[in-house]
Length: 316
Length: 219
Image (tube, rainbow over all chains, first blue to last red):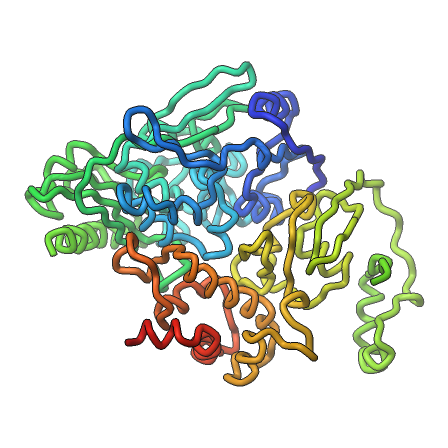
């Protein structure tokens, strides 16, 4: 691990200023992804600003009947919250489908949104990777790509966003709240939070340097059956090959987002509208223009079958 | 307990140490007195940190890169907690911090100012085993034993998580309280890998410690 200096921030604005004012600085919350990457020198921050004392560890009701989830709420505490289990069960289901009990106890809500791809070429510093080292090329294209993206990817990068929690937040239309070093707040709909790679895959999100996530808000509950289906190589503690988050209403309408397939939780609102016509109609629209590799083309029929399973569970 | 000096390790020291392992164990300590000192590295800024380990107050001065795992093993010489993968994938480093289990390899020691840490040494002793330790012995919940401290810390925490109603992927309905079933325990233990494959015996040990709660879940 490269040497760094460390400080523990007292409030959000000074934390944001500390990162913005120090070249190579990063926030650290749970640290479960960042430290992993620092050990193999994929991440090499020169300064860490620890945000654990900022008090963003509460889940509160919003004035319009939704929930405001503090950025530092752990995955375990978010999944276990009674209001989340009752009104936003897709979120609990997605969280408990990810990682291990130990990691969920430490991983934060904001950190989970910011987790980096698990593309093996991103992790291997001997390999070309435009995400890790801009301009170096992409060894994944033409390489081992079974786990990688099938849509929304580019000629520069075919990595996926690896998380589960954010896929559920996408069907819940979550909004990410931030503060920047000047104290300015903004609200970013989750649909716009993760970038498509394009020519700049080293930028995962739309956050500016020093911009700190303070909370994630969920709109008021919309009812329906909340389901999360995750298909992976082993029964537990593995990343998704394909996952499906869905909220399905009694009349068969609903919302659906896919994980493990794209640079962001993949939801196409025009495809949601086709839910009453069945899984094949939805995925045909949602994955229109997909560019799978020979190794990961299986993800397209797998997405259809996973969604068919979800629709069947909703009817049961 | 007197504060012990940090272990001075060098490659030659480790090689000499392993060659002399039998005598070193008999003497109760590994010495690196005969190892040539390594050239001095660039001075690193050290940081103070205070926390409680197994009920005892500890103060250390650490390179900020030091993980909680390395602070426990290399600085406090609590070597019960094991380093397996050092990347949060195997669970051998599992300890409890403020009552919940975490991977100590993926956490910086300096981030734990004021925390209460429990390691395998704090759960039980050879004279007074924790019930989970006794159950692992009775049910053969290990073979080589390397993952065992992490498995036991995790197992104790898992039963507590089920008792507190923390949901899991094994539940059909996450709005209900989880039960102590074999399926629940296996799902919740998935962050602890056992290369010897003692999984079914570990689940049996956990079921014994859960006692009535496990029997009721079966009924």
